[in-house]
Image (cartoon, rainbow over the protein chains, first blue to last red):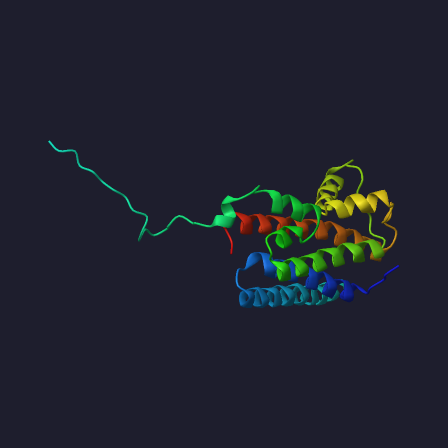
Length: 59
Length: 144
């Protein structure tokens, strides 16, 4: 059984979703890559920000 | 009185009609259906090899990781959340059917990792639907 940490699961999820979003939502290869990276950063960045927010709320 | 003849020409119009021979031939919904049944197949049919390979790798990877995490495959629809989960799982097309036939995945979610796996499988199905619709848009000429 594959047991990734929460952060590893977030990174894997962001990676796969960003590839699909990049390819399907933009037309030219350059814009696909840029949009894919943008989505990946937003996915991972928002997970980190929300995690810290929940950490401080829970204290 | 002489009738006034007005002749329209598409030349120079703001939105000229799209002329694409590939668009006019064959069954229009084939890439959509193929893309739904097998991830990336819609793009392969349209000879978009690179895009198809990346989509297939992403969707297959997500589905396989979900199964490896002992994610749940929805089989019945008792409440609204189950219906939504089943709709997402059905987006995987043949992958979902093969996984059900082979008895893969878990019946009950018992660990946190299995819950991640369940989400991975559902999202893989939703991403597969997006990629199948993208293949359809390529086929109809709505996207290049």
